[in-house]
Length: 150
Image (cartoon, rainbow, N blue to C red; front, side):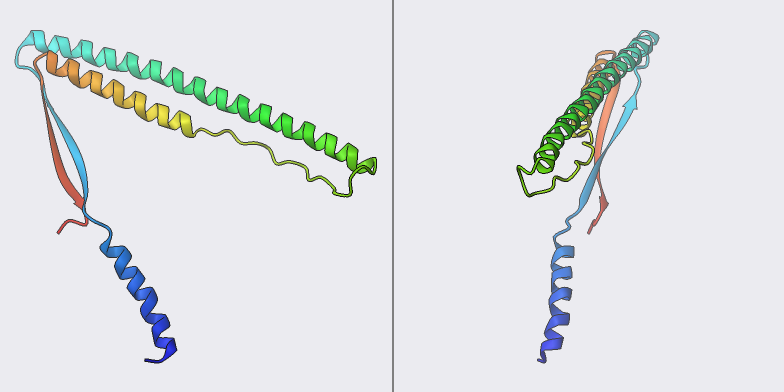
């Protein structure tokens, strides 16, 4: 087999291998059936209010996390500017031969905040579902294949 043909076979083989590694993807669907009696349905209204309050509290915590991430980025940027100023002073005074580079602005790292938001949302949902069931409602979880199904 000529060398040029080997070059065509390798990418095709890699693509086939990558595609075969993608297994089925599943998604869980949730169905809610309210209780039959009026007392149970009134109880569900309380569950909804508790979930709304939980989400508002979670939103406040995530916003606070984001503000702290922004403050941290500002402190880091100021620290970098101070270090740059000192390096520039040394360079201009002839104490070093290396010219400093002005630092880029530090950007907030929201990764931990996003992780926190996901966890808090899941906790609010779990609490709501428990309340829903305690009020006499029924929750059904159905898992279905949504991609790469055979």
